[in-house]
Image (cartoon, rainbow, N blue to C red; front, side, top):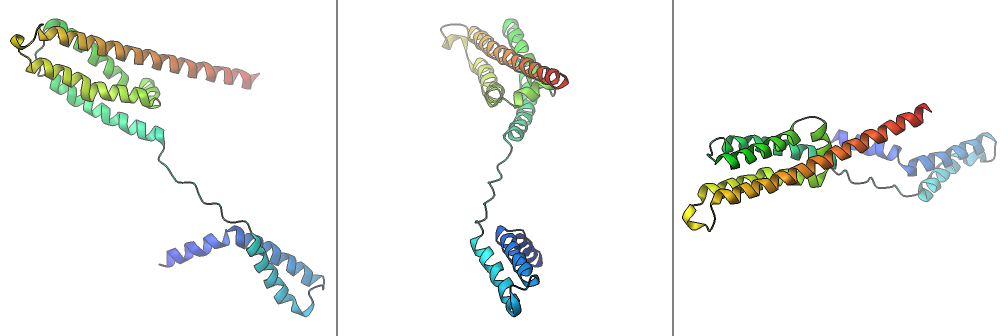
Length: 203
């Protein structure tokens, strides 16, 4: 309770009304010292303070304190990193044909490189679309493709299910490669911009 009242007092002392009123009250003190206010100087000082407080501009409301988007993306990326570990544990128990297994290994290796803490993950954390793409691949695309193969039966499909799995994994790998290339380009531009900044500063 006392803390609340104290905070209210300090808030008023720092407010525009008090600062403007104090400035006007100080002018009243100056008038008193110069003899202009006469014996009514307390009324003059209080009146000027009140007038200043009344004409003071209204307090500007503080902007809402929204969470830092980059911090949110970093936290989201950390969650995806944990989900990727669970995905790899699941995939370790799945038997796949050699070709599909090789494509899956290439894909998980690339996803792991994107999620590995370091400059790549830092650049990725600043790219909402990139974070979404990796999250979707880890949490949806890869497990659904593998699970569909595991549940499939050769007599229920017009083509062997491994062909579909290989094609799906190939498309996902190409998508991840495009994302990796974009991140490399983003980092290269950042480095180039920083180099130009240092050159301009030293020149």
